[in-house]
Image (tube, rainbow, N blue to C red; front, side, top):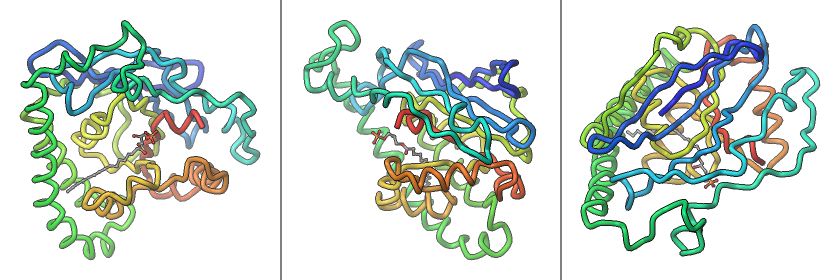
Length: 279
Ligand SMILES: CCCCCCCCCCCCCCCC(=O)OC[C@@H](O)COP(=O)(O)O
């Protein structure tokens, strides 16, 4: 997993985080762009052209898949926070190589065939989901119990809930992956408002980010809130819902990202996933 951080549009710097599989050298890449929106309000995206595919059947290894558009830069949306510019660029294509591959219609040399999925990989995939489900079922009780107190004493940052989420993510990841953090010191302090953009090459970036133990305000598509337990946890964590194709919902998000908005006042850190850039 790799993080790209930038404090200004002209002077980006890199602070990679790597998420390695214990048995292989495959790396799940994630890139984030971080900006102190209070000083220079803009949001950016990664320029990575390689996607990394993970699913329950391929936990034994990641398959790099080419992506035509990792994201469309958000600069055009947010050049002026007071007057957001409507992006006229053609809609970027969605990364559908995963589905194509499973349907046997993927890019020929991009991924392995279904027949390559070993029994061991299947077992590991099932094990991963079993561990994450059991951990979630146990920990959601704790989250529900402490939620009234969280709302009373820490309504905005919800640190206690993020601590539980960190435990959940750590318990899930530990048996299957070894997370190596590099240049973590380049990240701003937790109480500095910032916007991070993840290229969301796999769902593992969520686990990895949660292990940092920071009170991120994730942006999520609304459909995920419907998942039992995970959706409840997201609600209690204060995850911000976004209807991707709904212009009103998009505008609400843009207002939320303004430096003068509540985000800056609350000293929050926002996580955006880059697929939101390719509406
Ligand atoms: C005790 C249990 C604790 C559980 C904690 C759960 C914390 C979840 C953190 C919220 C992260 C939500 C991020 C969702 C991002 C998102 O919206 O992903 C959608 C993408 O995939 C692509 O969707 P699609 O293009 O439709 O395939």
